[in-house]
Length: 293
Image (cartoon, rainbow, N blue to C red; front, side, top):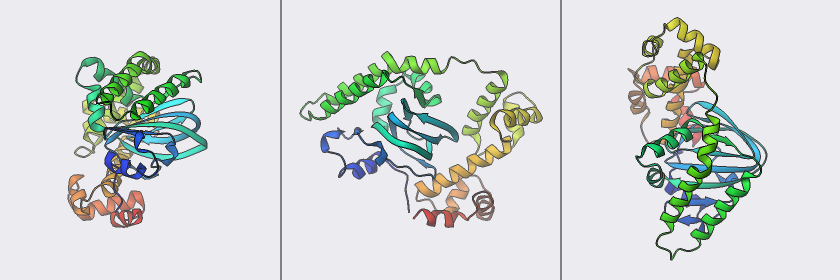
């Protein structure tokens, strides 16, 4: 059965493709050719943070059910535990990649207020546009990381990388994230954003539109109208999308039985889960899992 990719599993995949010097203390992996990364069009979840610096090419992908388009030059950051799905890529992809374990990422963003703000900004804005002149900065950063990786005798290299990365984020990338957040949202866009945030936290236990309307202090009818206008789907359709996507992730990324997954997703019976999945995915949960190999 296909599994979601962990940092350890990913490192093993690249063991024969990348020299040992590209891996640092079992925490950071440097990849010159990002085309080697997983490009599954089925949703999956990882336990590592991925930063991609696109020099050429473009791609479309989903992060936690939201579509993004990345066109070079740009920087893309996928945080651990997010649900990812690649749609398509165009042109020759030239991209450098830095993969950090969940442990290393947590040590980066810690508990200080400024770090949490930066983490939130990255979470909300995974794609940051760059100028061509910006690429020089990221090229130099990548080269410095590689030179540090080439000195395994240095006992402080992980700390050096941590401080270099934070310096990049605070001294340069943080400004880019601030620029991306300048546009003020309309009231309808605010409602839409708050609805999606609530949906991500509650879709397993609450699938009725009235629950979200009450939380947002609006009527169910008005919420449905706003969500349809701003997101192109009704609230109920989005709830089903989230449940279906989580179903696929659990089927592809865990060893849970289908009955356990049905219980995890708050279906009263296995039969109800099977009917729901087949209606939206066009096949049974078992057929979907078998198809993934």
